[in-house]
Length: 113
Length: 113
Image (cartoon, each protein chain N blue to C red):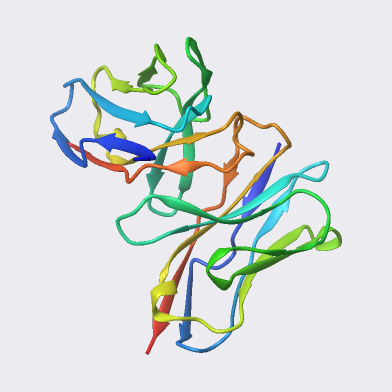
């Protein structure tokens, strides 16, 4: 069975600082991996996704994520955080063509001015 | 395009009442899904559909019914609401599967007293 772990429930950073949100997955083969962002009171929006190819994936809003097969990780990064990045971030996993993805529990990002 | 729309935005029910959460998309997507979001639990899939007339259960289907008579609409029915169904409900759609980019609606916040 597939699973996703986001070890950090909350992350606090200062505006302008770098950010890394952790995601570890469990799946037998190479899965599809996703990062979604949920702004307060909103639905989820896809930031980026990975299945194959270059292990460093670029997404929207200046985010990137790196797939590391040896560590079963897909961490999300941003070099300089803006106050508008304060939101809930979800990592998700699913095999190619899956109808039932698995979401992590989310990491809440707090940005201090 | 309106994307994915959900109504209502907020609802309060008494235990035992029934209601239908509406979801519609105008992107001609085949795959539609319903999730519930609870604090600390991430998103959990309730039901999904891969096309008109085809539905299937997700991780947490008990207490919920769905149907898909058209490509555009995917309503979620609570036949006899229970306090355990207090949650935020999201509808999502994608081209064909959950590993295609999913587009989420704004959510319905449901409280069952």
